[in-house]
Image 1 (cartoon, rainbow, N blue to C red):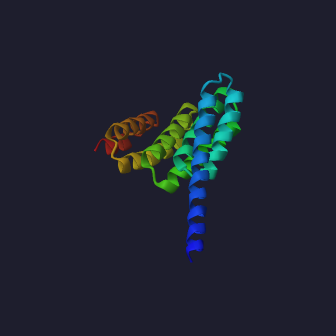
Image 2 (image 1 turned 45 degrees about the vertical axis):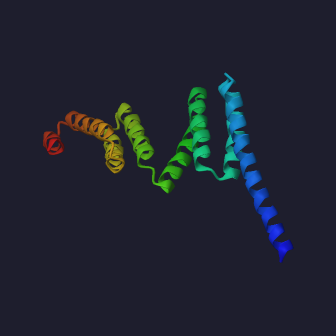
Amino acid sequence: MLKKLFFLLIILSFNTFFSQNNRDSVQKYIHISEKIFSPKDKIKYLEKANSFAKKANDDSLIIHTFSEIALQSILLGDKEKFEASKEILKSIYQRRKFAMPLGLYYQNKGFYYYNNFRLDSAYYYYVKAKIQYKKAKNKAKFIEIYCNLLDINYVFNDYLAIEDLAL
C-alpha cells in the first residue's frame, strides 16, 4: 500500500515537472523570437513555442503565441497562416467565453469589410461586435460600434435606421 502511494506521488510530481518544463520552453522560444528581426525566422521559433504551449495545455500561452504568429504572418504577407491563426484564436475565445477579444475580432472583421465596400457584411459583424461589447460592459467600444453602424446606415441613406439606432 505504501509502495503504491509512493509510486503515485512520483508519477504526479513528474507530470507537474514536465508540464512546467513545457511552459519554460515556451517562454524560452518566445524570448529568442523577440531578438530576431526576420519575420520568417521569428515564425519558426514561435511555432516551436506554440507546440510546447499545446503540450502544456495552457490557453494563455497558446493565445500569446498564435497572436504573435498572426502578426508576423501579416508582416510576411502570408494570408493563409494569418487566417489559420485568427480562426484558432477565435475558437479559443469562444470556448473560454471571452467577450472583449471576440468583440475586437468581429469589429476588425467589420472594419475589413467596410474598407472593401461590402457594407452588408460589415454591418453584420459590427452588430456581432456590439453584442460582445455589451456582454463585456465596455461602453467606449460599444459607442464606437454604434458610430460605425450609424455611418453604414448613412451611406445607405437609411435615415429611419439611423433614427432607430439613435433611440
